[in-house]
Image (cartoon, rainbow, N blue to C red; front, side, top):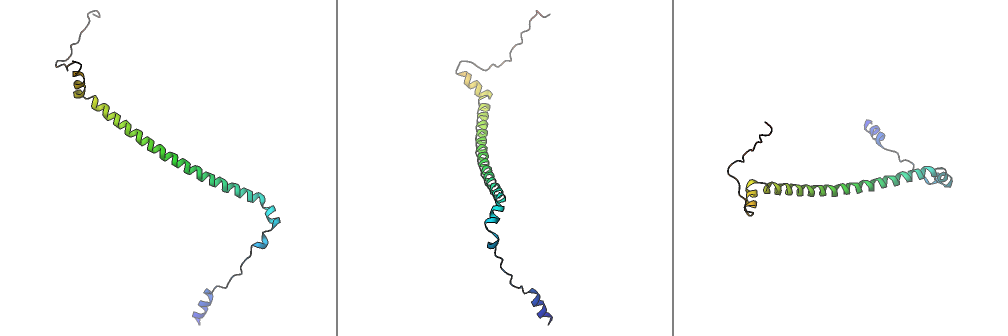
Length: 115
């Protein structure tokens, strides 16, 4: 008997279907028109904000790619400059002009006017 009462507790009674059509009529629409327009405006702003965010994300991605490419160019130019400014590269470059690398250090010339 106790099992029978437990089963009866869990059996759901079918609910009445509520029909919303009688509640929506011309008077209701006119009465709630400002609210409907407000909700429409909010929906439009929400959609526009989504499009604006996607546009900004695309622009950020293209700018990131451009920054990365410029960084590669900078590193390439920097390594090229460091290679060209090595002592062996400089001496090889000026040897074509007839200049040689000095073996002795330069002499300091001092003026006697200051004394």
